[in-house]
Structure formats: C-alpha cells, structure tokens
Length: 98
Ligand code: HBI
Image 1 (cartoon, rainbow, N blue to C red):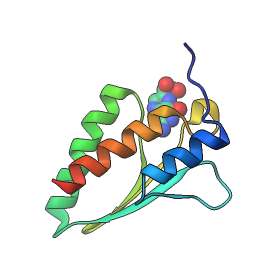
Image 2: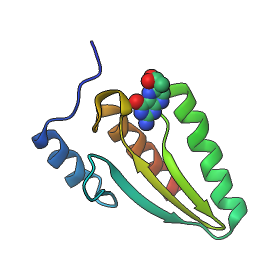
Image 3: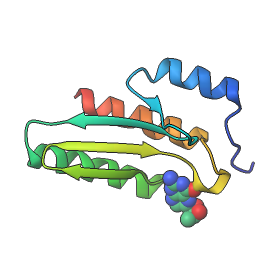
C-alpha cells in the first residue's frame, strides 16, 4: 500500500503519545532537541539513528552542535507526516532513554 499522509486526527493522536515532540511552526513536521553528555555521545546517538534511517529508507533532518542534536521529521514523499515519522520518533525516544 502506498505511503499515506497522516490525517489531522492521526497527527493529534501521534503527538499525544510523542510527548517530547512538537509540531514545527507552519510545516507538517515534528521536532525534538536532545542533549548528551558530550559530542562523542551525541555522535554515537546519530550513528545509531543513521543506521536505522538507512534501513528504513526514512531519514531525519537534523542539526548537531557539540552535545546537542535538533531533529526534525517529515515525509517528503507525502509533503507531510507519515507513519514512518512516528516510527522514527519512537525509535529515537527509545534509544535516547537508554
Ligand atoms: N526520508 N524523511 C524522509 N522523507 C522521505 O520522503 C524520504 C526519506 N528518505 C528516502 C526517501 N524518501 C526515498 O523514498 C526517496 O523518496 C528519496
């Protein structure tokens, strides 16, 4: 089945579960900022996410400076949010907790 864009209700439901994420102003995308003890930890996190993203063929838009990583998720193919963004956000939350 083709990738579907989340409906407004599905977006609301997803964001109610993804409590650390927020909508990007003026864009159907979600964002979260994560901080780590140092750059090594931040880059290690990014490496884990990168491997997941490449396997899932769904890549984050992100910015890193030292121990901070700002992540934005959206699905270009549907010009909005899809289940892939929810799954990637869940993965990010899971490994960030570890
Ligand atoms: N990553 N975030 C994101 N959104 C996409 O639509 C996307 C992607 N990675 C690869 C990908 N699409 C491929 O399916 C091609 O559309 C580039």
